[in-house]
Structures are given as structure tokens and as C-alpha cells.
Image 1 (tube, rainbow, N blue to C red):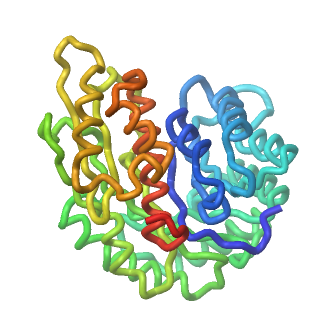
Image 2 (cartoon, rainbow, N blue to C red):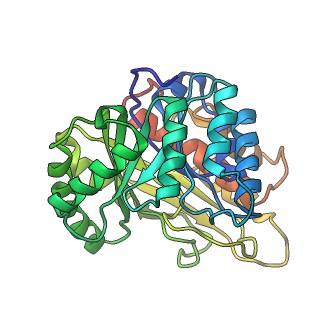
Length: 345
């Protein structure tokens, strides 16, 4: 089902309502060039979480888009014979949606069996390698890779490899990550991969440290890291406007927007003042009048259209899910343009 086409961008997205809303409103021309790596988020149990994920994919995925599916954060089912990755692979195959299973070198025998089943249905997989802690022991990693590929019945030529440096929020993180990734890239060249991808994330877990009531730039160190390695012919992955870690449920944040620019995220937030989410209107007014508002304005992305509507006072305030969806929508369009995947300026 997968075919031979390769993407130019592999955003790592939480499988939540906000991210799917952004994908649902992605410009159709970008669908073949972006392969989202969805992390299925835990909530009501692995089987129910898989079912909810399946429904969101079927309802929102643009035609022609391939997704990768990572269930590493789901707990193991305690009863029954159903498995979340298997359920996802079967249902999406029936809908003719290509869903590449993500495998980790430390996966258990049962998890590898799930990947094998899904890969057989969808014609390939994604090998996600942690590249944030230490240099790879080539002998050890190659040995484990051989074992994994034998079990899941794939060759490296059938797989995308994602080297995940995780969090790069400081210059120290960046300085540490670059040589580690260079070592991992040297290891990848020992094999023939369908694609080699470098991933990292530069967004903090929340914006509590960002000063309120003004636009504050946060450096996109994840993009800077990829730029330093670009000469190796690697593809780009990031965590969009989210932190790489998992987050539990909490109180709804004060109104905020994370708006991607060339080498920064422009972050806006208000404080809780007893007026609900009305502060989002002031944020949107400030953003559309800023010099970092895109030249195409509201037409740049669906998310920018939503922001412009609030700036004009023509729609409701929304909630945190909506603000994330708007920011993610803009981010996907902006990065696609940055990578040359679209002519949008």
C-alpha cells in the first residue's frame, strides 16, 4: 500500500483532537509530502484509545497521506486477545489508509509480533532510535537491529529510520545533540534505508515562564539542529509546537498562541483574570498586526484564518485544544514552505 514516494517532512504529533484538526485542514497539495508520526496517547485504556485513534484518522486524514503509528505510550492490554497496533493496522487497511508501524529496538517479543503483523499489511515500517543519551555501540545496535528486522520480517530498505534527539531547549542541549547525531548518522550509513530522518523538539512543556501580554520569541533549536546536519541528506522531523514528552491532564491554560517563524516561535499568552478566555482576542489582534504575521495573512493556513477571525472579533474564543490546532496548522504550513515542499510564501 505504501509505494515508493518519500516525504520531505515527518512531524511527530500527539494523537489528540487538536493535532487531528490541524491535519484535517491541511492544504491538499501537502498531503503526499508530509508523513505524520502519530503517538497514540493513553487515556481510557489501550483498546479504547486505539479505537478513538482509528476514528480520528478515518475522519480527518487527507487523501494521499501516509501516517506512521507509534503505540509506545500505551500500556499493555491486561485482558483479552486484542492488541492496539493490530486493531489500528487492520481497520486502516480496510479503509485503504497506509499506516506504517513504528518499532523501537527495545520492543518486547509481543510488541515486535504486533509490528510484524502491521508491517505485512502496510508494506513497511519506521525504526525509531533514541539518539539523545550516548554514542551508539555499533556492534550492539547492529545486533539488535538484525534481531528486530528478522522478527518483523522487513529489510532496512523497507524502513524509514528516525534518529530522535528528543529535547533541545538550550544551547547546551544543542551542543550535546549534534555530535551524538553525527555518530548515529555514521551508523545509519552502514545500511540502506528508505529514508533517514533527524528528529528533535525545542518547545518547553508549557509557557508559564513566558512573560505575559507581549510577543516572546523562543528559538527553534530543533530546526537549527537539523540545519547543522542537512549536508548529510537527512529529512526533518520535529514535535511541531509541542514538547517531546508526554503530558497528563491538567487545568486549562490561560489563552496562548504559539506561532512559528523562520528561526523562532512567537509565543503569546495572557494571565487568568477571571474573564475566561476573552484574552485570546487581544492576542490575535496583536499577532495579525505584528511584522512576523505571514505576508499571505489569513490565507497562509487554516490556523491563520482562525486567528484572523478572532482578531476581527468574528468568532468565539475557543479553548486550549483550538489554540493548539491553530498553531499546529500554521506550523505545518510554515515548515512545508521552509523545506521547499510548497510554493506558499
